Structures are given as structure tokens and as C-alpha cells.
View 1 (cartoon, one colour):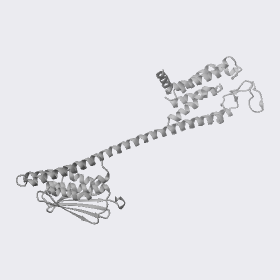
View 2 (view 1 turned 60 degrees about the horizontal axis):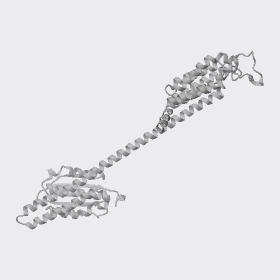
View 3 (view 1 turned 45 degrees about the vertical axis):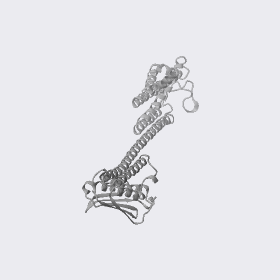
View 4 (view 1 turned 120 degrees about the horizontal axis):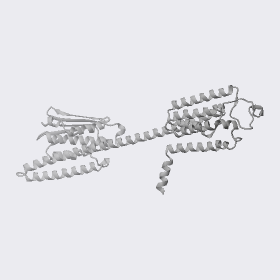
Length: 418
């Protein structure tokens, strides 16, 4: 039963069914007013009006009903047909009937379904036609053809003159038809404006949803890139230390077993530190858990245990840095040291300089090894440049006399300091 009611409700809400129902209501009202005159010519119309209108009137009524039925499909054509039907009714002085409401109904539809300039032009044409018709009926020298039996004609309360020449009717003329047409157009235009506004709101909502989705996708991509850079730095550095310690321990095993044990301890410590860094990266740690420049001594100690001499120097007065700048500076030093360990060659020494300037921090890592040509390319350097670029800074890397240098500048405003 519920499904049947739902189906019935859906059927009744169809535009075609609604238009047919409206036309049926107008026809029923017209029959109630006009059909009664068939049995009693002394009702709404005079006998003369009834005798000459019977056949023509029903043709015009049918045209008005058809205009209402097709008003959504051909609104302008339907309006023209309804107007012609009403004009013929007035020309034959047949009298206004409920079906004549087809004109304002279809004019409303034109205002709803056509652009403003089109509907305004149609309204203007109708008003001009109404004014012309009213002037014609007022100046033709004939009595208003639509009269009620026994009603007075004109001023002074004179009874209907049987010798009067009846002419077309204007159905109230400008004072009645003008406001009716303007109101019908205004209601239709208001409905159209509201629909356009709702469409704009929906489009704006869809645009905001797309923008949100794009931002979310960009955020996911950026986070994925961040994790990739962090993992690359952590894993590359840890593996470089582990490989060097493993090689050194294997070489010293026969003559210095204690050095091998120390190398194994370093490997284990490096592995644990790398695993801790990886967990921090994947767990999206708090800012305080991300390594920064304060952790450089521990990093340098691990590098030196792997056999690479590192000297750390600070220029300027150390200060608190924004979390992003602090972490980026640490990772740049870490990656530069990793490159030196992998490519500088045995016996190479590295100098790392952290400079604190006005609104910026600089990082310089220079080695005296022989692997500059190899160290000048790769994902590590691309990751450094990406980190710096995200902060508005820059990274320069390349061979120098007697080695390879990485120089980075990371700006920050005084208000950004942590």
C-alpha cells in the first residue's frame, strides 16, 4: 500500500499531470459558469449572446485548455494561442470565463522558463496590445458588448437600450488586465530568480566540495612526499653507518676483535635509532619529538664511530627556531653527512657549520674527499632542495676545491621563532 501511495504521489507530481489537472480545473469552472446558460438564458449572458457564442465559445475554451497543457513545452506558442482565443472572445463580446486565466498562467510560465529579456519583451507586447485594444473599444462609438441582463449601461443608471449597437468588450481594460499581467510576470520572474539562485548555490557547493577534495588530495600527496623524504634520510643515513661499521668490523676481526665488537655495538645503536626515527615519521609525532639542531652532537657521534671525522662549528648566537626550520636544518646536515660517508672516500674529514643570522639559519657541510662528482646527484639532494623550497629557502650543492660542499639557507621571520 505504501509503495502504491508513493507511486501515486510521484505520478501526481509530474509536470504534465499537473498541467492536465490545472486545465481540467479551468474547464470545470468554465462549464459551471458557462454551461448553466444553456438551460437559462437569463443567467450570466443575454439570450442573444448565448445564441451566437455556443459553438465558437467551446472552440476557444478548448484552445485555452490546450495552451495550459503544453505551456511547459512551448510556452511562447501556448501564450500566443491563449491570447488569440481571448481576443476572439472579446471581439465577439462572449464575456470573460475562467478559462481566460490561461493567459496569465502561461505568461507566468514564459517568465519562469525564458530569459528575462525574452519574457519582458513578451510582457511589453501584451501590455501594448491591451492598451491598443482598450483604446479601440473606448473610441469605436459602440456600447460594451458584454452586458448582464437587466444591468444599467454607462453613467446615470440608465437601463440597457434595446436599440444600442453592441461592440467588442475590453473586460475591464487597463485597470484590470494590466495589473493582472504584470503580477503574473512578476511571480514567474521571482520563481525563475530563486531557481537560478539555488542553482548558483548548488554550483558553488559543488565547487567548494571539489576544492576540498583537491586540497585533501594535495595534502595527502604532500604528506606522502614528506614521509618519503623523512624515510629516505633516516634509512639512507642509518644504512650508510651500518655498512661502514660492518665493513670496518669485518676487516678488523682477525687482528682486533674488540674493534669488531665495538662496530657491532654501533650497528645495533644505529639500527635502534633509525627504527625510532622511522616510528616517529610514520606516527606523525609531535613537533618536540622531531630531531633538530640540538640533536646534531648525537648524529655526529654516530658518524664518527663509523670512521668519518666531523667537526661542528656554530656561527652567531644560537636561538630557538621554528619547528619546520629546525627539523629541515637537521635533515639537511644528516643527508650531507650521509653523502660524505658514502662518496668522500676513506680518511675524509667533514666540517659542518650552523650559522644563525637575522631571520635565517644557514647550513654548510664541506668534506675534503674525492667523491664530489658522484655526490652531486641523487634523491638526497633533491630532497634537500624540496625541504628548503617549502620554507622559502634554497640549497646549493656541488664539488669544491678538494671535496664537496652543501650550502643551505632557511629563512624565517622574527615572529615565526619558536
